[in-house]
Amino acid sequence: MSRTQKQLQEHAASMIARDKGQKSAMGAYQRMVRLQYSLPAPLSIFDWIRKVVTTVPYDEVRAVVRALSNLKGGISVHPLTVLKDIGGDDPDEKRAKTRANEWETTLEWCLRRIEKRGISIVEDMIQSAAVYDVVLAQVIHMPTQLKAAGSFGKEREVAFVRIGDWAVRLADPNQVYWTLSDYGLEEVLHVRMRTAGEVVRIWGDAASAASKKIAEAKSKAEAEKQPYVEFEYVSHEDGKSIWLQEGTSPEQISKPIVVLKPQPWLMFEGKQVPFLPWAIAQGGTRSDPDPEFQLRPILFPMYRAEQFATANIMGTIMVSQALAKMAEPGGVITSPDADSVTIDYTDPSQLMRLHPGEVYQQLVKQGLEPRFREAFDRLEAAMQRTSGVDVLASGRPLSGEQPFAGY
Image 1 (cartoon, one colour):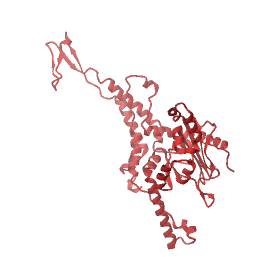
Image 2: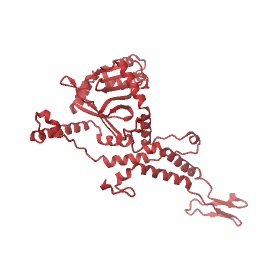
Image 3: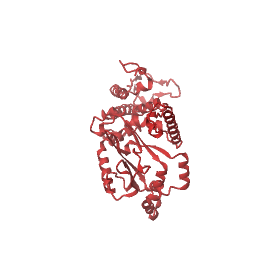
Image 4: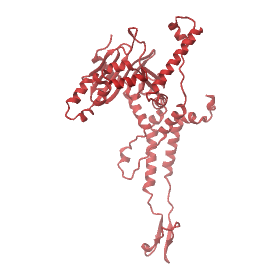
């Protein structure tokens, strides 16, 4: 029995609360790759501090993407899966192999058409796997999407459908909540922040309540910036449903704007197709009961062991001290009248003219603080070692292990 709209909203709130720790970790991974870091208060209040952020997380992720993005995946259909379609029972017969090849060709053609929508599927998948240890792709049936949106604009409809009936959206794992059982994917909730203007542009007549508020507002420009939370839920029992809530808090339940009532996401022979419009590939481990620790991306040890934060603090102190002492004196002049000493800066040798009885003593300038420099270097080396990306990118084996080609 399908849920009511209120029950769907309550269930969505429970899914968000369940994965709160996981999304917190994902947000940290995202900030690390973006090289976003805020110094703790004791350091940030000093004027002489110059923030330094290590680029190791970004470098490691880019190395993975560069190493794997040239690999092209192949679509394979086993002849055993087409027997029902051809009405046969022998997967080795020529008809089964021919039909399997036809399906492979059709699917590869659809994939190439999807890429013509301007989506870098392979690179985005590798990036998501490296940063989050999960890849989430939503399959969109364009005729169904256009029907749900109502008035989508004739020109836009023609342009989008011309490319094909299918589209693929690589989703940000920060915005997706999913349930995997021992039997497979059970349900998916996609939560996105939208402005009122985006809601009207995407959903057209289905979001008439939002467009009405914009039309009645004194300042349409400000009204179009009003925030909305978009919920897109799909499961085997409830089908697909989409609703909007005003505000910025996904966990808060409020009066919804129902864009799409619960219904089968795609019908075939009068029934919902026996699969969900999402493809999810998850790494890590299922043995840990806490969703926060199930995913183990390459940034996991850098975040959990606070290597990234500690390296930034060490690098900041090391560089800030060096910059603060850059103008320190280079020598001492002993003279009854030291102000009379002149230095010729126009001469590359910077000659210093001293009078009789005057003495100049050059001071030895110290370099970078050895303790901080050693700690910073060790932390960066530890981050590179724990990620294991060097083996993938360069082919060099880890110490004491077999060559990369033997893996």
